[in-house]
Image 1 (cartoon, one colour):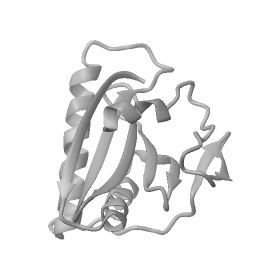
Image 2 (cartoon, rainbow, N blue to C red; image 1 turned 90 degrees about the vertical axis):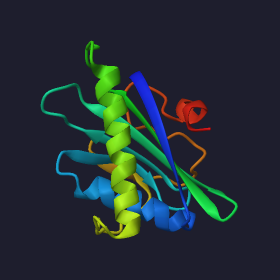
Image 3 (spheres, rainbow, N blue to C red; image 1 turned 180 degrees about the vertical axis):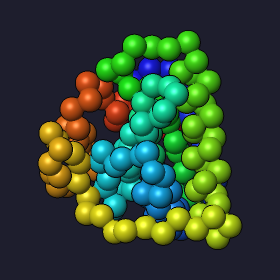
Image 4 (cartoon, one colour; image 1 turned 120 degrees about the vertical axis):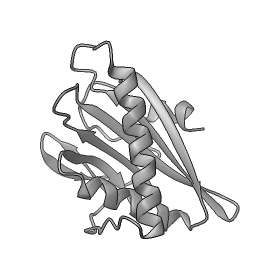
Amino acid sequence: MKAIRQNSLTVEAPAPAAFQAALGVVQNIKNMDILAVHNEGQKLVAMEKAKMSNRKIYVIATESQGSNTVVHVAVGADPRQRQAVLDGKFNAKGASRFVDAVQGALSGEAPAPITPVPSHYLQKKEQVPWVDPNEEPDIQLGFSWLGLASYMN
């Protein structure tokens, strides 16, 4: 991914509830598609097809920290596209808006209803079961998203 920007949100909610809120936000954005989701591992990869900028890849993970949960979001431009001058700015704005949307979904200000989905990843437009959350899914975008763990810690 190019021009990676990150953001995080600490909430007083259980990790599964925070993950479901993030999943609901992704499902309710019209131009965003799920590339990979692992419900038990609470990891999510999505692509936003922006109108005026490069496509963005969102990598979302939740982790428990005591009684709180941290929602980590890393956003980068699609590596298959040419890098644009404003990618970093747009990615930072996208990460910030996503975190705000998750906060709104958790507080009930901006509900994001979800449709349950099985743990899977897309491979040539087919859903392949994603069994181990620590094993990288082969979503065939030409980059390793698990390597983004350093951005999420």
